[in-house]
Image (tube, rainbow, N blue to C red; front, top):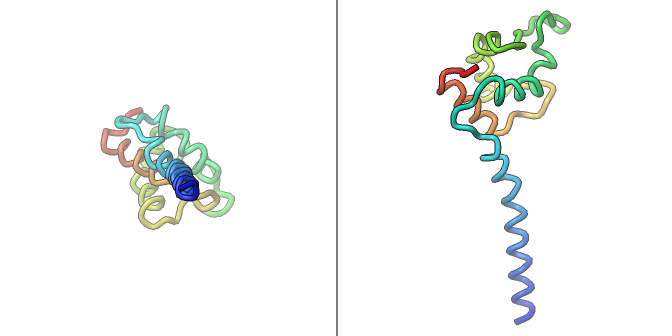
Length: 113
């Protein structure tokens, strides 16, 4: 009986810790009506603007994504490269599913500033 309780405890603890990180990643950053300033700009600042900043031509032509309007203007290509072709970001880890879902929500709600 003691072995069963010990085994059950180990299984439960393993289950809790194995689900915690994935669940947070999937739902932790989601917002129903995201705005550029609060939700989208931090993603682009951390994942995109290291290469896509105003005037960067150091390694060929880069699409400039440095403010609200340039982000909206280049959004369709950016979303394709991030979610469909998985070619961006080149120098960083891929965006999580939660961040990609947030980008789609921003588009769906009309690119709130």
